[in-house]
Length: 206
Image (cartoon, rainbow, N blue to C red):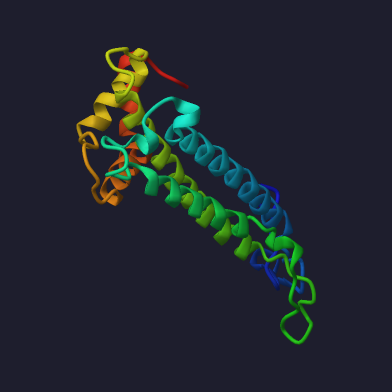
């Protein structure tokens, strides 16, 4: 916030005082560092989400059918969903490299040390979007895993979420193109619609 509220342009103009000051104070290092730290945190959230997804699909860990496939050996179930999550997590590891540790002089060395803040912010946005897709995949896999625990029922909030998701996504009875499933979960999750359904069942969560 200090950087956001600072006056760092060059020159600085004070029309009330008819004053123009040369001020090479522009340097986005505080923003660059914040974005780099954010990238690392977001990448870690995606990493642990992918691990939960993998555990649900591993029969040795979950005790459920491999890849939650209706017919093991014939169908691949949600195996490719985990591939997608793993790919996004791997991409995040590259994007999470701190941009602020790099600096390329510009303008004939007038700007001899730059923050790389724009690059850090752009990469943070990419990591955030990858995280959203990884979380959507985890929710999609969890939805299918719940079916194998029937007739047991989860808590009211989880059941409300399951109902909302099932209205958009049919059970996986055979292999199909999974991108539409992921897109529907993503839309429900990040539009706030899924949260609204859960809160209608259990009350405000925050």
